[in-house]
Length: 196
Image (cartoon, rainbow, N blue to C red; front, side, top):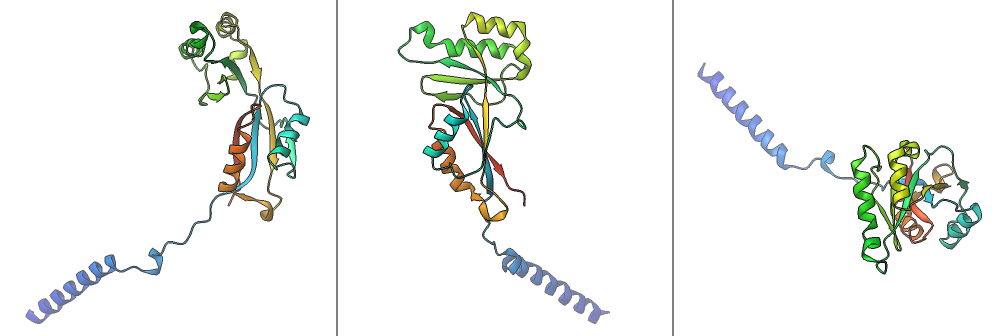
């Protein structure tokens, strides 16, 4: 019986040491492999209302993106509406705070402003609003009171990928996005990631 207890004690001690050693030893499964950055298949670009296809092409050419296939005013995106509020510092004090007045009035209405951060473009603030508002009398009254116009975005999609060989990394796409957003006509730029 004493021999069995000694054998069990030695076995338990050996297993504990093996477990502790396993925690501190790096196995091949612990080795981190470099992760390839996400691949971007295209850019969805939101332009101001009234931006023509010719203007879109000129902007893309200026950013060296003219060689990619273009879909203008794509119909697989939902309609997006926005208002453009002048925030020019040279305006009078009452005009200068117009953006805050508009925002405060919109926040009072349920689901009036979409969950999209406001966009600053030059002397303007772009506020995206939900599609339900285009027929809402209270909202339209505020627009009239503030002398604002409801506008509809124009969308453009440029496709990088044509199979796996013509894709771009997220870092490269980020540079393209930043350059496009410098244009006054561009409201937003978002990535379309490749599956897999």
